[in-house]
Image 1 (tube, rainbow, N blue to C red):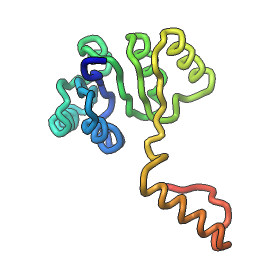
Image 2: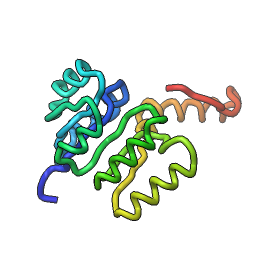
Image 3: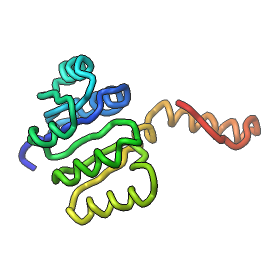
Image 4: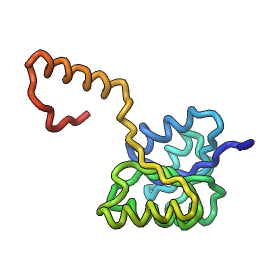
Length: 157
């Protein structure tokens, strides 16, 4: 592609800012075109911080008005299905946080929709390769190897 990838973002909460916008803003070949966020003051502050071109109060308006190649959606998972469907039906590629959506049938429907249209539908696991998470993984493995810890059932990072 001889031009930047034009991205729109849905959601300006903590994950949207720290895990997504902050990282995408550093990538060459990426243009942060639009941000859809219902909390107006937050949206404007975040857009200014990361130099996002336009702010929308609603993702539907962003999809209709902004010239985008793809959308990065960072919202509560119970909203993922409707948002994903709207993005895919708008002909855009989509990256979203896990989980894909609530329920296997709905997830399968979205995967099939993206595949039928030749669109990328990527589900992020942003913390998988995070240095802090990797350090914790190695430490727990060492404790287990030394017999100091049993099977890890839950970790919050």
